[in-house]
Image 1: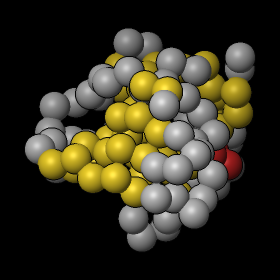
Image 2: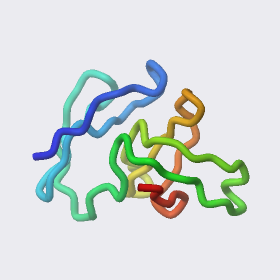
Image 3: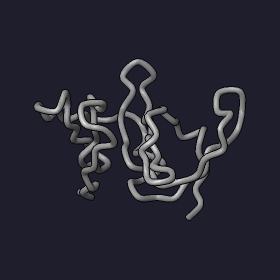
Length: 105
């Protein structure tokens, strides 16, 4: 199992945080107290913490940004991973999805 570094963008803002994952399960911090295991029928996250990315500009993303992935979460309603990026020393609160980002590594 590959351990993902833990790092909060802003205290109390992240309700679900991925701590580690492999092909059989994902371990998540849920509401900052409870761990839950998810047996994913989906792919693993496209990006990893610390990976350099750039935001793809479109109707939803109008601010040019590049930075490091600082948080990976799971969107329960959309059933997909979302990412927060750190740009200019601050973690951006906006959720980005895989199709919003391109790798710079």
